[in-house]
Image: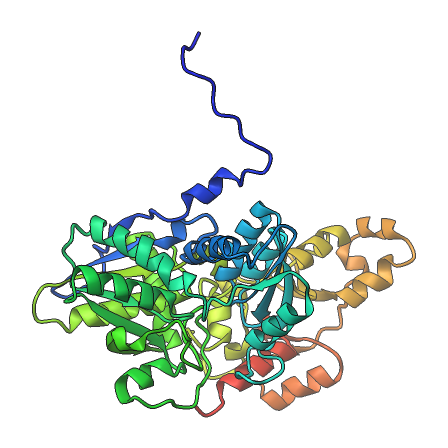
Length: 468
């Protein structure tokens, strides 16, 4: 028998032990990417419980609100968030028994939105194409909800002093100890400003020579402000969580020593390279920070020791920059072009990208494949890969609506075999004719099936032809 003393009992109101794992994340050196004469480390904030650096901030803001009496039992936590702060708040608020409402711009990844909902958060999606002062701007909505709901606490990461304090008292000291008190520069992004300000304050105290370097998405106003002192009109960017159309109250921009502007294409390419070469799965803002850090390192003439962040996990972006189809559709990746209709095919049969069925498959099999791939129609191919039909949701519904047992019948009994086929040399006007007849275009070269072209494929292609 063991002689150890019994474990301390866990009380019903104690928060889950997972909260004790926030912070104390590893620092890992980049060894397979070109860092010039410098050594570059990344702090793996993707190792926090909800997979991001924002867990630190969320815990600090809720605990500060509790101490100050702003958040009481039965209260509601409200936040405007790009997703990661919301995840941290949802985890901690749920653990402590608070209601949580998150106002999230609609450009955020579906993985983040599904995650906060699974944690019990109420989500209010709003427009990501409007600026501060518009009634649908996400921060303004959060502020209104706080006024309307009794006992509500607006976390307000952009102005809450607990945000930078979390980094000044935890993230900064961790880095300083891990880097053995020998550091030249830290590369950060600015979303709410907490990381920049907290780390800047800490390193100003322990070693003022440490440079704070900003990596900012193209379209954000912060890079231009650092370089020129002027506030320019904000553009748009696809990277999530960093970049702003205003200077947050928590962002002490006087701490920034230099800045790099990184566009979406470079950010996504670098974060994908990070996964291939270093085995680290980071999110979209990680690509921006790492790209900025690599530029800083490569322009140095003397060796320096540099730290940046894997701000969150790439698991939240598998439907975005780690999805080749999304990258091509958004114009962030170049595919081999042929100069004909093949350039409009988003899923190419010869690349193994087409979800299809055979004529002897059951309708249930076809339905399951359509749902799993989130498509509304599938080509019907015979054994040698020749298109013999097409099956869409309307065909399925006509067949099974009177008797669901008909899902067991063969695809050949419901498919359309009057196909609208086009050769790769056909024109867009020919495509429009197919669409006007309510059909999907099947592109064939001789008897060889190449792929489908839908209205969405054509619209995506035309959008990418817009002047820059």
